[in-house]
Image (cartoon, rainbow, N blue to C red):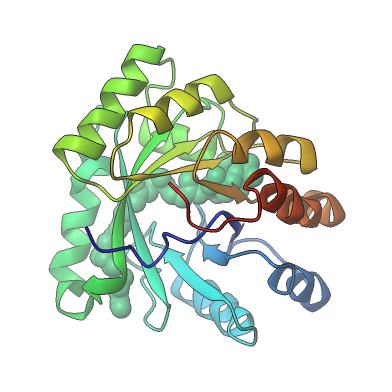
Length: 239
Ligand SMILES: CC(C)=CCC/C(C)=C/CC/C(C)=C/CC/C(C)=C/CC/C(C)=C/CC/C(C)=C/CC/C(C)=C/COP(=O)(O)OP(=O)(O)O
Ligand SMILES: O=P(O)(O)OC[C@@H](O)CO
Ligand SMILES: [Mg+2]
């Protein structure tokens, strides 16, 4: 299989178009040594706030991808696009409903070579995304492994995303998910508020995503870049 455009990413910062970030903080984030910026959020995402944030990140020389969470926020000009599908919901709207509606509108414009589906497993019941999508967050290890097999082996999704947004997750479960994935890259995000949790996450997943800490404690957020690098032994993109 060809290497995906995001296969070298070990550390990523996720910026929310619906939240304010100063120019100074944005510069620190974009020059931190992180592999990429993902722009995305589960609420309040519009065309205007997405374009605005993209233009500001574009001043810096690093990959910037959009995680498309609303059709309205589908903005051209990103280096790559992720389209989330929520695997652990019973509501088809979040598995393939909104996505196919979006494709009816924008399908002819999608840059397919740099667009990837993400199989989300949302595991924090308190996360906005869990409430929005009716995610079934109480999953056993067997449930998680079966969802990963479904996404990775049957659906051949290139990304499985273990999402604990707002809370640090169960790293044993994340390790099990990574062990079960054969071709998909396992992203982990949630509650990383400094170097120690970043290192644990880097030892458990392929790609570590840091979001809220950017807004609550920038210095701590920046410290996660080196922690992930060190845990990865300085390597980039190893499966
Ligand atoms: C014009 C052009 C070039 C288009 C290309 C873009 C493209 C590839 C379009 C595809 C077609 C399209 C428009 C599809 C629509 C996609 C869509 C609406 C999908 C639904 C996605 C989805 C399941 C959303 C639910 C929420 C979710 C899982 C969001 C993912 C991101 C996330 C969890 C962020 C964390 O949110 P946050 O707000 O930080 O949460 P906390 O409060 O917990 O911190
Ligand atoms: O905001 P946090 O909790 O760091 O989570 C990161 C990311 O997984 C959110 O989609
Ligand atoms: Mg958030």
